[in-house]
Structure formats: C-alpha cells, structure tokens
Length: 450
Image 1 (cartoon, rainbow, N blue to C red):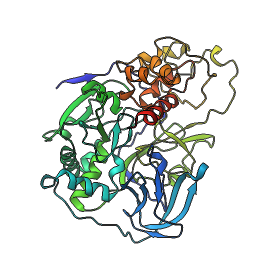
Image 2: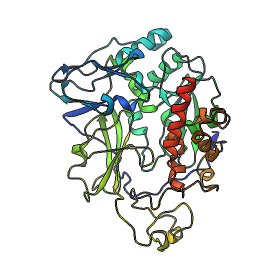
Image 3: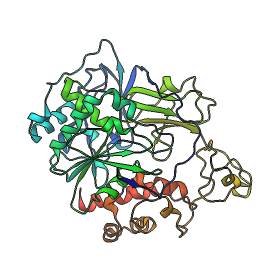
Image 4: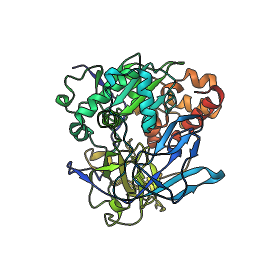
C-alpha cells in the first residue's frame, strides 16, 4: 500500500479528547439555518416568522443560482429571523414540532441516470451546499464539470475523531454516494484515508474511485493538502470537495428518497466534564450538550476545531459543515511576566519554555494570544508546519500588497484559510494569516471571478 507521508505539520496536544467512542444521540427543539456560512452566497428568504415548514422544505435560495436552496432540517415553525448589519440574513431559527413531516423525493439508481438528472435531484433536495469548489473553497457551481472530485475520509484537526463509526453504520449509502460522484465528473473520484484514523477493511472493494493513503500530522486532513500531494490544481481548473459523511448523505437520498439530517459530531475540549461522539442534525442548538457539562463558566464554545472553528454562544447552533464542538478556557486575562516565566505548563512549537522536556504531555490551552501583533518575523516558522511547495510568507505579503499577478505565481489557487491555521498558531508575530488569506480570495473573486 503506497502511503503519502506528510512530514511538515504538527498535532497540538490538547486535553479534552473523546474517550468513549460509542455513538450517542441528542435531541433539541431549536435549529438555525445560517446562510452566511456559505461564502459569497446571496440569500433570498422564502419563509416568514410563524410559518410552518417541513423537514427538507426550501427556506433560502441563492439569488445568483436559484436552483441552489437551503432546506429546513426539521418539521417545525419559524420562530425568529435574525438580521445583522445592512440587513444581512444571519439566522432562521426553527422550533421543531411533532410528528415529523418530511419532504419525500423519488428513490433513484445513479447508475441509470445521466449527469443532468443527478444534478437536478441534488439541487432539488437541498444537498448541494455540501459541495465545495476549489479554487477558493466556495460553494460549487452546478454548471461546471469539475476536473476531479476529492473526498476526505479523515480529520486531523486537534481533538478530531475518526469518521469510521458513521461510515460503518451507513456503508451501503456510502457506496451509493461514491457512485453518484463518479457521474458528476469526467475525471477521477479520489478518497483520502489515513493510517491512524481509518480501518483498511472498511474500504476494501470500493469501485469507481481511487483510494490514497496518508500518514503524518495535521494538516494532513485538510483537503487542500491532499489535492496538492495527489494532483495539484492549476489555473483554469475546478475541483469539487466534500467529506465522507457528506457522501453518505448523498447515497441516503438516492436510496431512501429522504434527507439524512444527522451526522457524527465529536464533543470535545478540556472544559467539559463529559466528551463523546453524538449523532446530531446539522444546525442544531447545542445548549443541551453544554448546559451542566462545564467545569467552569469562563469558556469559549467553538463550532468546529480550535484552529478554524467559529465562536458561538453556549446556547448557539452547530454550523452547517462542522463535525466537532470544542470548549476551551477563555483567555481574557493579563499574564504577569509572560514569556519570561519558565512555562512548565505552557505549550510552544519552539523551545521557548521548559515544557519541551515533557514531549508527551497534553495541555489545557486557552484563547490568550500571549503577545501583540508586530511585523512579520522572517524565519522558517511557517514552513515547518505548512506542507505545500509554496512560500507562505511571500504569498501573504503579496495579498497585503494587492498584487494579483504575484498571488497567482505564489499559489493562491491551491490554498484557503484553513491551510494557514497552523501558521497562525505558530506565528510569533501574531499575524492573522487566515483573515489575510480570506482577503486575498475576496480580491481574486472581485477582480477575476470564480
């Protein structure tokens, strides 16, 4: 078995990992559709407060591609429509009601369908937002035929867990989903797996795909890293990406005629009394998982992982694509002596603190950045954790200078914000690399389109 070894990167040793790997369930009465999670979508609201909706009923559509819709995850009543600055549509909060009344679609055999028929079925069902497009990591455009489709079957982010339990429960739907993907591209469907996170026997005898095995630390689980080491993207090419749980959702739709709203979500973090793995509907309120489960109240709740996730409230909602909830201490304090202290309980990628003498220790890290922003320090900090053949600092500087030609030459088509998350963590200058990367992508789209 050929293995692609990722040597540059780092697994951050955090406390709060999952110890019980049995799948649990959790119910909530409230859900929130959050259109802004999909970058560059222009949402049009299709419902109003007080309206009854079915599970799978369109609630929002994309003005520039009206066949792309976001659907309700439950049967319920629209309780609140939240708008932000300039009336940006932030949330559609839905209260679930019984019994479940779900939109039912025809069952389909993808082997007997044309590409256009499969696309129409996916768009009508509301599953299209699962597809992301490279370059730029935006919502995939249905009219484009991608060069290849990449499915990532593992996650190496801090405290992440294997997707295998969910895939094992839904293997028939997973196989159907892969057959669907093969019909959507004239190229190949690549499935990326990791020696640590995946069981080879579970993925034996899969057809119509090419399996690539990886080893090594985070960010090996980033699909951008996988694309770079398997078949890099060039200017003018398009690639679609999704994770293995999304593939199950595609297969479930075609096999049963219904939307699969549940996904495997890891509840993690050092500030929780109990961690675990849950089957949760996307966009569910997490209040019941957090309430009464905290070791202390001064915490940050994150939808996603500590490197790329989004801060939410303790009664907030899981975001559309996230498969993890993380709770860590809030870093809103001043530290006496700071880096001048010995730091036996502090973690550092360098040998700044004496904690390097205990390499197997795990840490209770908070959100304090331990310093202030200052100019770039030219060093090899970024390169040590950045497994691309790209000069990361020079690319960030080209973005800050709005130099589009240089951004293209330095590889902006291959990366998105998450690929710079470890660089941001390692940076002694406290540069917000992910934010700069997003600025660069927005500039590219504004000037050149996507």
